[in-house]
Length: 498
Image 1: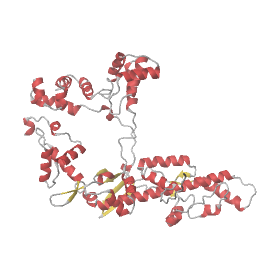
Image 2: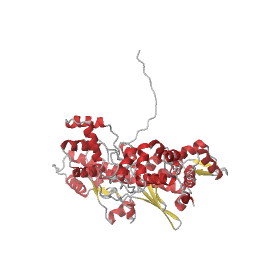
Image 3: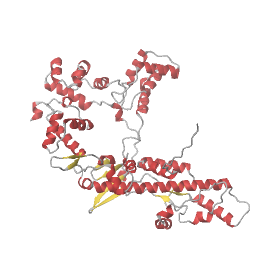
Image 4: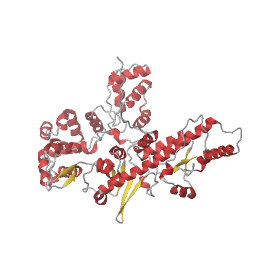
């Protein structure tokens, strides 16, 4: 039996403009630059450029309400443009522009491009020196293409053989691959294409001159006593290898200080290894100066060429010409692109306004940090900022994610300023990041011949006024990348202690 039911519900839907604003809000400075370039490529009504003083003064007089005025959105097939209103309204076509706060003269915040090649390109350039035949070159190309970003070859030899057969219809053997792999491993950087850490370190050691002190012992230790080496069982190593503390320390130091466990990370592309701050914060004469960095984002405005086209359309409309040089389809195209351009520019302006509000609120809440630096961070959560700027917590989260600020004490990710609070024995609330910094200092200053356990670290923190459980100390230690006590143990000679 069919039944009818009536239900009332409230739904919230975002307009296309709101969605565009949200997406722009999530972008950092460099991504925004690319997004603007993409939009300019798609919308011919947008062009790069800065307006003259007359137009800029007119923009300053525009009200927020005027910025939100939109063209009518009736069916474009049935409507006629009010060109006079379109051309002469306060939202002047080519007066509309987005200037994402170009910042000041500090060139240090510009994106510095490094002319470089990828790791694969560098390795391929070196292949020409190996005099490989056609089949060996195919194998070498497959090996290089399979190397991970950190420089390791983690693919099985069988998989490489299968790929060559499938892609090139060439049969190769495991012996063929192993032979070419050794030649690839002879390339720079040393240790490249190793299958594990042990092989990576051994490749680098064997390429060192034989007369380097500790080299032979280091090779023996890695080849025959690798597990004891990774566990830092110094007593076992000395007994098995028949050496004293000095010889063991020399070999250990050679491995730890001269070898690279991730040889591939020494090669950078222009897209990585650079951070462009989205904000700068300075403390000048008792006031904070907050700047939104936009040096990489071009100024955009409505195209003057299309303004002239619209002016021509207006003139023809006023003269009541029966035949217009611009057809209805072109008029509809211009209208849609004009609306799109205006929405995009407004979204950029709104993004800039929201990001500045968030950064200003963070500075208010973390004023001591921006004045004095690390050691003065206060507990702060996203809701604290949302309450100050009267916006949703999700908006704050979008602004904070992936954004950086240049301070007088270095560059920090905005997420750094958010942390939970811990109460000291005196009842004072401090940021858990400050506690982590103290924990790091304690570990740095500990006796390296007898590192402290997590419980001992908790006791040390309690002596400084922080009563923290051992499991919490263990969690913080892992977050800081500090290994367990056994792996922090080092060989210290008597003269090093004096």
